[in-house]
Length: 328
Image (cartoon, rainbow, N blue to C red; front, top):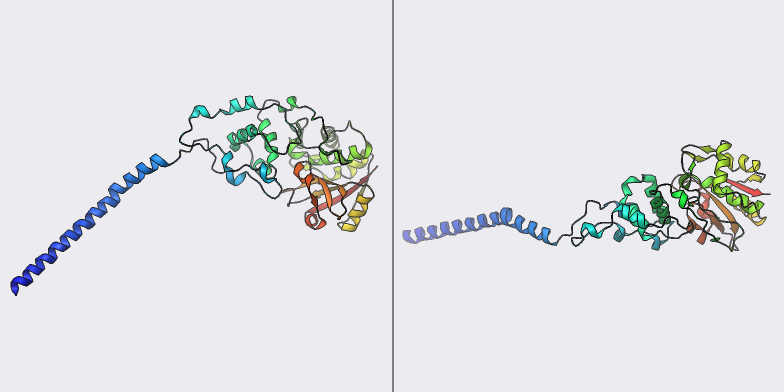
């Protein structure tokens, strides 16, 4: 009986020793062998990310409510490279600038592929405000890409066509190359010139004076104290300034029947709007017509895409800060 107990105890001890040895081996495998295997696998399979890649591009650049989906920059448009990409296969920014068409159409609906690549290559050089603007309207990437050229305005050409011949009022873009890089209110006109641009649309439409351009309207605003450094245009440009130009101006109350009556009488309307569909701060737009459903046709000098749809009074009401109607 004693021998049986002794043999049983020895067997139990040997089992414990073997089990501890197995556990020890597993611990060694986990802490020593596995990390090396994992590291080798990662080094073999994972794509390399270039130093130039921008991890924030997908968040900051793309479509939102005011952009057309096929104009958006998606994740395939950033310049993260794969392990098969060599430095020589990606043109340097200077090479891309040399390939960029020096002039651009101010009425384009989407930026060129070269402009998008240049913008992403220089992404950190542009302000947070620029990032917000390109998210709201990706077309403006063309404007920012050309700003990297020396004297970009010198390459400007007249587009030679009216983007909306079906409407009586002409459309102008504030970031048109002919004036978009000139100074206005302490910034480039393409950024701060919405006020002179909308007033030019109204003035040209009512008077027929085709010699007035957004640039010359900006010069008028500056000379008369309506350009405010860091804040764009004073509201006085739309009232007092317009009257100095010979227009008759009425300030309207925020009431749909009043707005509709002015439009049906042939009076275009300038709105100053706050944060919402058009802007994150403040912006001037023109209501140039009303349709059979009572919805409004708008020319937005910053975003041409807004001219391809209509806006209901309910959509605009909470964004409107002031309203002016014009006649001549």
